[in-house]
Image 1: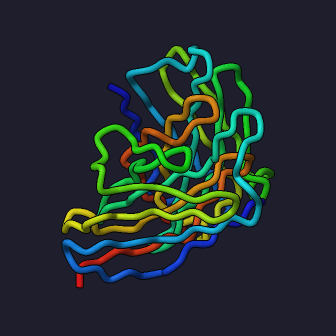
Image 2 (image 1 turned 180 degrees about the vertical axis):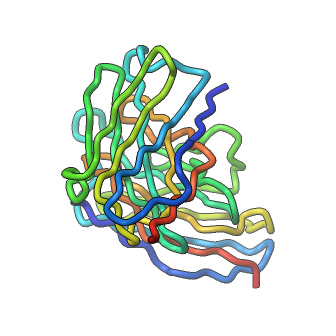
Length: 119
Length: 113
């Protein structure tokens, strides 16, 4: 059974760096074609894809946020970490981590974690 | 980026009646290598994470009732619910995955009349 869970701060100040951790079970990020990504959703708004990392360390980023994002994996801990620099109130959103098999659909989602950016 | 445009924004439905949501992409989503169309549909029920409903144009995800169906071609896609049930309320999103960045439609909120 595949599960993913996001963790991190619920409140960050403007200009700070956000670090979110996705801890997963039921699969390994050393398995061919497996990937873990991040999606966010501002309150009352649509979904936005942010980044994805694959078993072979191939990384993909949203072009509009590329300069602010870094995605890494720790296969020994079954974790994927997303960092986003220079946070702004418009980055207030629920952040989800997702499981993906190669080019397939996003078949499993975490419960999401709400991050508020405010001074 | 491929833009995904959904209509309508809001869809009041009567239980037992059919419902239909449209999604249009700014570029074709047919992958020539394998002949598959890389559009998926997700449902976000109130207070929940999104869940995969339909993948690769028309394939229902595991456990999804057969009242849900996906169709379309080229740049125009449709999600249909043959007979809406109360548990189907929420926001529906289409998503393209033929190329990065993955992009979603703006969502269609389905609510019971």
